Image 1: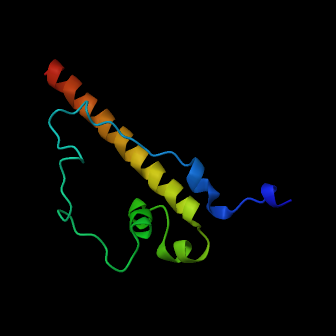
Image 2: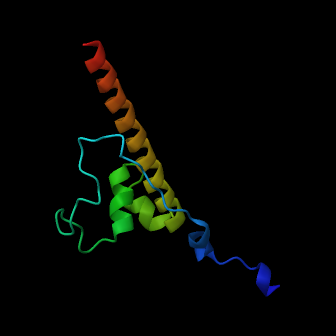
Length: 101
């Protein structure tokens, strides 16, 4: 039946926004403080391709041939969470080290 047909782009409707809270760091600039045009951005490559390649988890050839959009978005999210957790661990380790002097 037509109602049971799943379109490949329906995953966007169930995808939740990743929100990383940097409020524990009082000494860093939040992403809300950054203005547009502060950083360079790609002109001829989509933001998704750019960010997926930055993760280091795939090559351009893989993105172009066998990795779909959902997998690319998943890679980006995995890298963001891993980087966030690593930064948080380093921050709290530095705080603990400073206390123990």
